[in-house]
Length: 109
Image 1 (cartoon, rainbow, N blue to C red):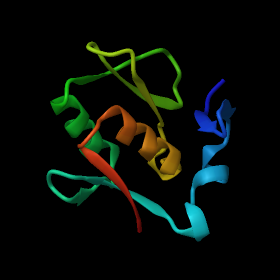
Image 2 (image 1 turned 180 degrees about the vertical axis):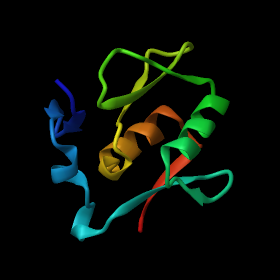
Image 3 (image 1 turned 180 degrees about the horizontal axis):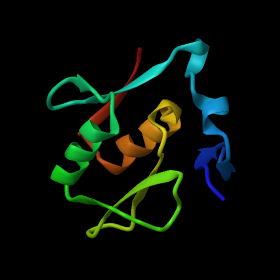
């Protein structure tokens, strides 16, 4: 089972195709993830991974070939991202923003 957990109207649910449901934000606008300290747009997992590593996150391997996962020893948080960067969407972006306060921001493209 893979997908992204979504919290909406007080209920968590698993979205198995988050690309189809949340690839565009409100009013059809695409979203971008911005690294606040540098102002750079996250446009690859290599760039995102460097930032996460510098913040103490580590790759987490659970055997799912379709996911990149990151874990931080000082928390119970787990960031799960689709291995295909083209499927990286606003739900994934907001998950990162919540778990790394004051480091990232989601904006309209």
